[in-house]
Length: 446
Image (cartoon, rainbow, N blue to C red):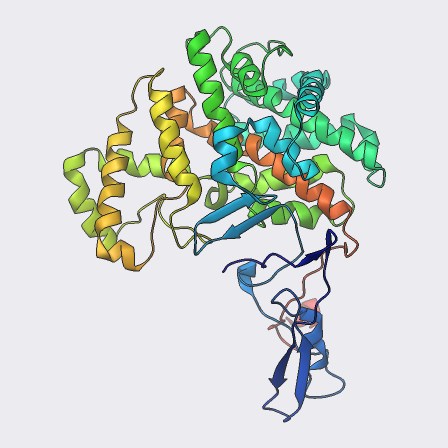
């Protein structure tokens, strides 16, 4: 099982149970050490007692990419990659995507429970009440070049909010923290829509607080353009976006969430912390997978070319984008849901012909022993780009859409970290492999 297992709870609190000891024998000295085990893990600091010489710093664990290092405890998201399980606050992702709106799930992530009807109505009013960005945001966006990448503009705009709302620095006040969370979740869809419109040379319409979260985003984004949907299409597309936002809302300690926790460990406010997370997502290895899938499908071109392409993949000459995941060694539970969303979207948009290529690729891969042995299954990015493209989004907006959903998770982790009794400023160690000492040679003698 990947990740930390669910702790035993007693009266709502984590039980501090003795799970035994890990005994280590240092072959250099013959010394034995007993390290306490809790939640199927040992604290890395316990390794410091292992040393060959009393004057040594002590043993370190070495883990490039943090593939087997837990940096925190969390009660937000649980993943079991071997069994293809993803749960938010204990709720299966399949149930949430089927039965809830995105704002319900955002409430769940931030508060720990699904809202009652009156709570949801109040929450939606709050978010709608903060859907108008700060007046300086439009001026800020106008300062970017016309061809600026939307994600780079979004990162800058979110960071700038820190200067517009100086009260955000009061991170010790729970009510102030909550205000910033509502502000950011409320404004982010409008800012994202403005970023898109800026790149197309269009005006910035006011959001409509009477619409739902995703409907308002669609209206603000496409008002007055050829992509502006009719009433029925707007409802279908808003529901599709809602479900896609839910699927992307959180995913444990991924690159962007870890970056956000690292930055916020210095007591940075939520705006710059979320901006740092969005900057990590901006990197193609994190947020660019669905765009890479479209590029792959464009290169393949036709169903008849798929067998030759798959032979190249198995020969190590090409990569099958959208398959496999660092966490999931089973079918990504989100991928099945995304596939069903595609059918709903195509009912109100033109059918994206790339879906046929994708489905044939998936069929072959799921029947081929090469991919079965390597446990390579479609992930959430395999179909999402096809859906976004059918909706009318350009590829440079894909990571912006990712950020709109993930912001709820980022803020949930930020709030959890602010309340963590073990919160400390992040300061990883390194293993130094450079020269021991080098004398400076005067300039004239070099």
